[in-house]
Length: 595
Image (cartoon, rainbow, N blue to C red):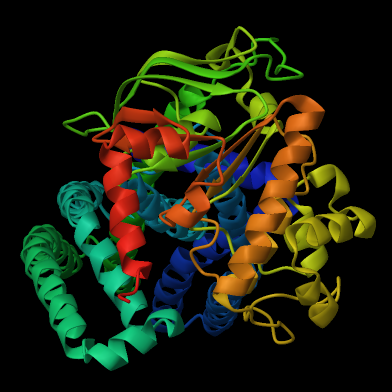
C-alpha cells in the first residue's frame, strides 16, 4: 500500500502543477458521483418502507431523490472524464519529455549503446503509458474509496456485523496486489523477447529492408523467427496469467461467500422483526454495490500498483542518469590543439563486456594533420572516434589536448569544438535549412551559413533541387525523399556548419557514394582539412575501407584487436611490409588487370 500511496501522491502532485483546474473539476465531479451511488440504495429502501406504511408523499419524495441520485451517478462520471482525460494526456506528455531528456541527457554514450539500456528504455516507454492511465485510475480509486466508506457506514446502521463484509473485501485486495507483482516480474523478464519481436516486425515491414527481403525470399524466415519469439512470450505470459487469475479468483470467492452470508443475515433479522423490508432492499442493493465497488477498486488498485513499480523504475533511472552527468569543472576547451591530440594509455571496455574494445592505446595525432584509421571490422575504430569526440569516457588512461585532460573539460564545451559525420548518420527529416543548420545551432536559421556549408560539402545540387525551405524525407506529405548518397551529403554539410573544429571526424564518409560523388567528397574533405589545419591547428580523422582514399592522409594508424599495431605514412607502412601493406596489396590486386 505504501507504493500505491507514493505513486498517487507523486502523480497527483505533478497533475496539480500541470493543470490544477482540471484536477479539481475532475476530482470534484467524481467525488459527487461517489456520494450519489449509495444514496440511490438509501432512497430505494426508503421508498419501499414508505409504500408499505402507506406514506404516498414520502414515497414520492424518496423516488425523486433516487431518480436524481441515479442521474447524477450516470452523468457526473461522464463530465469528470472530460477533465481528467485531458489531464492524463498532459501528464503523459510530461513524462515523455522527461524520458527524452534523460535518454539524451547523459554526457557520454557508452551506457546508451548497451542493448540492456535499450531494454530499460523500452520498458520505461511502457511505464509512461501506464502512468497516463494511472492519473485517471487514481482519481477513480479515490472516488471508489469514498463509495466503499459511505456504503460501510450505511450498512452499519442496519447491523454492525455487516461491517465485516468490508473487512472481508480486504482479502481480494491483498491477493490482487500479489498477483500484480508476480505478473510485473514476468513482464520485465520478457522485455528482451518483446524487443526482438518489435525488431523483426519493423524489419519485415520497413520499406528500407523490403528490397533485400523480397529478393532473398526471407519473409517466411523472419515470420518464423517472430512466431517463435511470440510463442516464447505467450508461454511465459500464459503461465503468469493463470497464476494471476487464480489469485484474483480466490480473493473474489472469499468476498462472494461473505456477501451471501450478509444477505442471509439481514433476511434473518427481518424475519425476527429487527429489520424493515426497506433495510433488506437497502442491504441487498448496497452489498451488490459493494461487490462492484471492490471489484472496481481491486482493478484500479492493481493498475496503480503497476504504475508504482514503473514510477519507481523511472525515478531510479532518473537518479542513475543524473549521477552519470559530469559536473562542469570550469576548465574551458582549448582554443587550439597545440602540438595535437594525445592518447595516453587509453583503455575502453563496454558495460558488461568481457574484453576491452581498446587496450592501452598510446597515440599522437599531430596538429594540422589528416589521419586515417585503418583496420578490420571490430578492430576498435568507431570506439576510438567516440572517445576522441567525447561521446565515450576512457575506462583507463586519458585524452589530452594542449596539456588539458578532456576528462576535466565540460563535455559540451569539447563537443562544441568537434564536428563529426558518422556512417549511421541521422536522417533529420526537417527542411533543408534546419536539417543542415542544426549542425551549429547559433546559425540554424541563417540561410547564408547553410548555403556556405552546402557549398563546402559539394552538395549544392541538392539545395538547388529542394530549396532551403523544402522538407526532406518521407515523414511529411510534402517531403522529398533522398538517395543514400544525398543524405550523406546533407549530413556532411551539417558537419561543416562548424567552421573551426579542433577535431573533424568522418566515419566511412563515402560508403553510400558513387565514384563521382566520392571524388567530390574527397576533394571537399581535403579542402576543409587544409582550412581547419591552417586556422586552429585542427586534426581531421577519418575511417574508410577504401585504400585509395587512405593514402591521401598525412598519417595512417592501423588498429587490430583494439590495439595500435602500425602508424606512419603510406609509403612508410608499405615499405614496412606489415598489416597495412597486406591490406593495400589485397585491395590493389582487385583493381589490377592482366596484360
